[in-house]
Amino acid sequence: MRASMYEFSVPVFVKTLGNLSAILGKGAEYAEQKKFDAAVLLAMRLAPDMFPLTMQVRIACDFAKGAAARLAGEEPPKWDDSEATIADLQSRIARTIDFVQGFDPARFDGAEERRVTITIRGEPVEYVGLAYLAHVALPNFFFHSTTAYDILRHAGVALGKRDFIGKV
Image 1 (tube, rainbow, N blue to C red):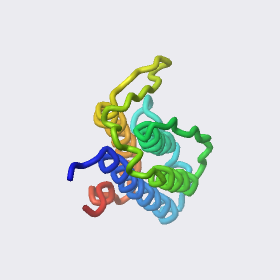
Image 2 (image 1 turned 180 degrees about the vertical axis):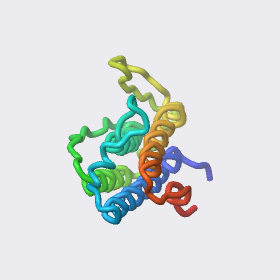
Image 3 (image 1 turned 120 degrees about the horizontal axis):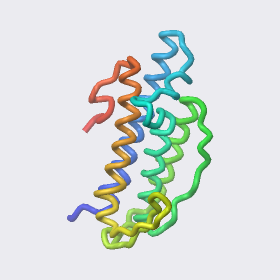
Image 4 (image 1 turned 135 degrees about the vertical axis):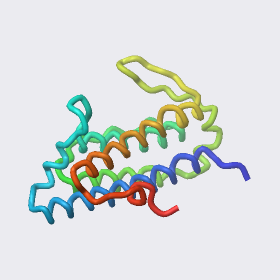
């Protein structure tokens, strides 16, 4: 049996987002143990020109829901960016997981050849589905998920590779 575009996207998004939610939970526990407001973590960034933790999580979620919808031949939903707490971010992650898991795998049949158009810096850019997943969606999803992990690790949260990768 040949692996499908569904298998290379939805389960990958679900697993990594679940791990990201657990990582955020460890961030909340760390803030509680050290007796500081967890909102401090949400505003942290690795460099002045990078997005803070909150945006890293939002963008990771957006790439997961966007890729799943586009590969299934749909437009992704637009969600408000109003999360103000770690619990809010975990809710966004849960909503994203529910959304991507809501697709029937059959919707991804032929997705490797499906035309996908996204807007980059105000300009429409078209990809073939496989190239979009392999060269745009997954790298961006992992970049922002990893950056969220890195911000919390840099802040002192006791995290390791297993927290990010999870059980294989």
